[in-house]
Figure 1 (tube, rainbow, N blue to C red):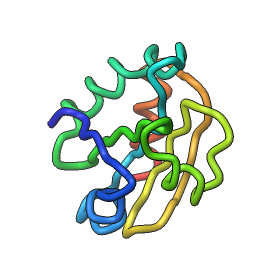
Figure 2: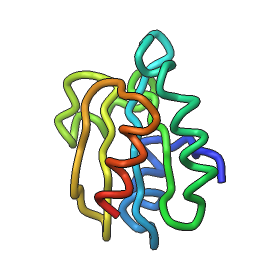
Figure 3: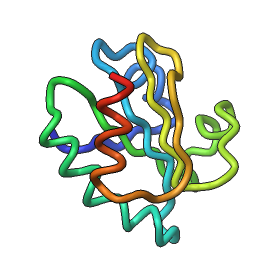
Length: 106
């Protein structure tokens, strides 16, 4: 399963009401580190399909969701389980580090 683009309007349905854990990637087109981790998140999404859902929220187009979570810098990754934030990670990291963070939380 590839990553899913989520908007402020679809955030609750896609993230908070999900049956599986969700990693939310808050990013922007102009953010170099965001583009750097994008391919790794796509690969993790494919490899962990069914165990976790990875979604992307463009902060320029959807300011409400990141504001509600207090996002101050991007990339910002939030892991939701049962509709609640259980962990978050700020900044870029190698694929192995991202994957072990996700696996350790789900």
